Length: 139
Image (cartoon, rainbow, N blue to C red; front, side, top):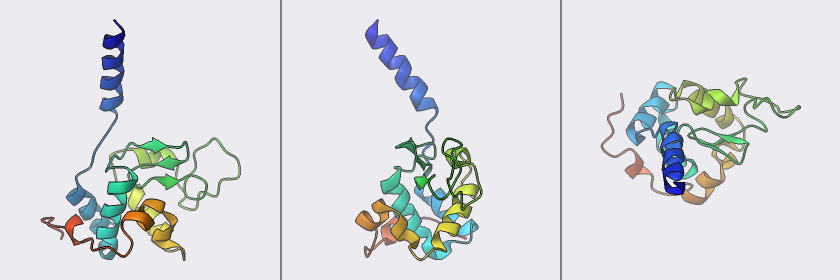
């Protein structure tokens, strides 16, 4: 009986997970005006969330890019959050990457830019990222 409960839980958890294809993510970057950053964004998503648009980790990081709620979105749990992207954090957990790309564009306006993300600094910075866009048709 315990095994059945664990399987049911895994099925329920799995139904909320949405993995986006790396080429679809690159196209969303291009569509969002971030063509020059597409490879960096695909690399970031690979290491931050494994392309999972519904990932909510550490109670403060949201979506495919793991955007932090302390500065960038409103999680409605902590007074005094900055919400510099002007969006609810929950919009970063759906399948639409529009809000994610707008928020990323806002983050990239800051002097820290990609340095805001530890996974990018560790796995993407100063690396050849061409493989992240390989075989992707970008308009």
